[in-house]
Image (cartoon, helix red, strand yellow):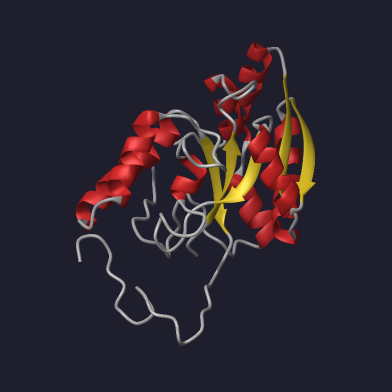
Length: 230
């Protein structure tokens, strides 16, 4: 697995412009229960924008907020309630996950409405800037490939909910160097920064394999995969 699901939060508008509301989502989310109950323990949980099959994977992000429903409920009470819309792209897997999240979040007092989009409407919703939370995937074999970390977290990208120049700088420097150890350090720092500010709660990495035609070339296909420090 290379690409974990992530609950993106729109930090540019209410309610998730308040870090307390974002923290409530972290504390209300039981990724292990979804992994076991929905997917029969088949897929790994991730705390950042990569998974065990990808480069620069971090098993544990220091300070990552885990499932703590009483803390979530206390925050919701402090905020005077929390009402949100949770969206996702139409797919059987994503719809199972958002349904499970809705149930978990409602248990701590969060009022959750689910919205399922086709791709055109999803793009429009991101462009509008009025969305609350979106279940998406993040990352790839390399964090910058496909729907990678920058596409979800850099300020200048259309499918992000974060406007943070410090994080932008970390991701730009990581993408702009061939030094593997430096990239690993920068991505680890970016993962910690995302966690510290509760920008997006990560879940499990669903895709168990990636298939490709034999005519393709690239790392892991025609050249050896190298991990940091190797």
